[in-house]
Image (cartoon, rainbow, N blue to C red):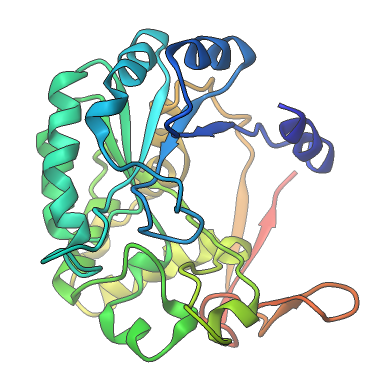
Amino acid sequence: MNYRSKLQALEPNVDFLMSLYLHESMTVETIIEAKRAGITGVKSYPAGVTTNSSSGVMDYAFYYPIFKQMEQEDMVLNLHGECPSKGDVTIWNAESEFLPILATLSQKFPRLRICLEHLTTAEAVETVKNLGERVAATISAHHLHLIVDDWAGDPMNYCKPVAKTSADRTALLRAASSGNPKFFFGSDSAPHPITSKNGKGKTAAGVFTQPYATQLVIEALETAVEIGILKEDDITLDKINGFMSRDGRAFYGLEKSSNARIELIKGTERIIDTLQNGDGSLQVVPFRRGEKTRTLTWLP
């Protein structure tokens, strides 16, 4: 929790929710202690599926005692929902191959809050809809924009899970604008240095959206209306509020918000090309660099 204190010192107005990394060294006692310390949940990465996941999960059944204790403590299990590439499993179908595992976890631990993070397929959307009320999913801003063609030729758009087809993106847009509280925003923003995105070796998986995340969601929905995927009536302030704030807070059992408000002014700002430290030795490229976007202002 020392890390949380450091974050809180940087931004006292943000309530940071802390998670543990699901690891084979974890015990039931770890979960009990974590709950007492104020830890919100546990994040699971299947081994090797994304950046910094080499110590991830090989066998979910091994962790059933952990999940049972989490269920009793009313903690959240956050899932990176992909299977490792092996045999016929590739980055293209890794999410689909994981969905039976999600269904099994939901059936065995029906009171465990489970969040399938940054889902990318129509199949995953339907699976989450059909599972119990304690299963939810996050949708990222970049996955509301991207399809496979966008990352295949641009390493800055490469992330895990990879963006899929236009039909899958349509399913995400419809889920985000549906008003269904099972689906809410999760940024999955990853500020990898530019050298790890287009340098030597494997490309780091992740897209940096955080400075413009709200604008990116609004603009994805707006574009969906323009091209006929959504109707104007589908995009209401109440639904946007639910997707961006209210429904996620409810899933995590947080108290009501501070009622802080923002104002978005269309087309008055450009997304910067790079963020960098003082001497320029570290540079990060934001998603949709150089494009026009809305200006976001916090209202008093």
